[in-house]
Length: 132
Image (cartoon, rainbow, N blue to C red; front, top):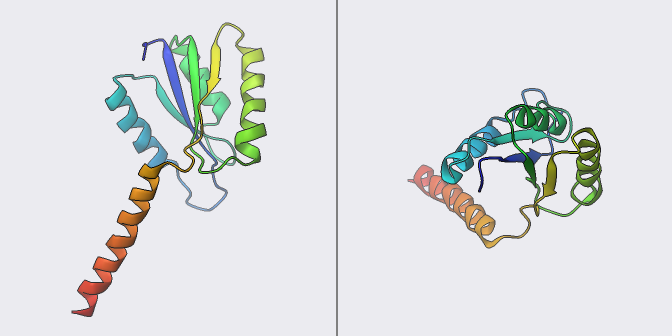
């Protein structure tokens, strides 16, 4: 990935008290380290900051020329199919010199199933330890 490319990992966001983007921030740091790219940001589509617009403005200030928005969503719902493309179109109008691209959402990737199974195993192992 070229240094002039920025990435925004975009989650839904939450209204819940104490809701945080800390996990998303951690994933963005891991991704930056693996890609060797310091221009990786995170954002929330709704209810939290930074917003997609705020994250993109920050990347533009850092000199990126292309921004790839990665929906951190499991399914293709209204947000992935309509809302995110609409926000990207608005950003494109504000920053016509920047190339915006939307990556595929996480979807039904087998690697996610592996994580799910690990979580089930963790619970079952903890239950077995408590039973002793």
